[in-house]
Length: 223
Image (cartoon, rainbow, N blue to C red; front, side):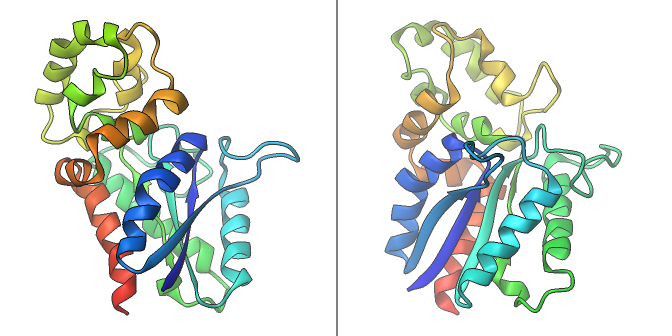
């Protein structure tokens, strides 16, 4: 059994990992646990910055020599303290996420003796909410009143090749698209439940960058 720590950005990601991702990885011989980075003496998750993330990941890698570590951070709103975030946004979201993850891998392992294959950073384009656009019908089952917005959200989804391409401006990021919903969409309360209704198979089918990451995690058991 491979030991894997998945460092999430916040409590929503933590629930998603615990409820959906970890059980599936366990079926493939990967024992995965979630972890949030302490941002103060009493708070975990959110407010991520490069120095705090690097320290936490290095500490996790040092706990056990056979543990692998990965991340699940949103591209949208990621702190410019991470290399690559402040660069000109001429690349696609997937290209930017891939490059930022590459630089994070390089920076975390700089001047350490950890095996490079033990750290598999993942940046999600554009954010967790993009995964929920994998199935708008299931998304609209979150609250009875949301059915009225089904056509509008389906129209949003139809404009993009896949949910991870839904753009990330202040007004058009996936989470901003959900502001039309009443009752209000709450990431922690609704997000993991809707993701469970959609299912990992559908999310992986619709979100190629996410699917590639999950495939890499499953592949850990083959080494």
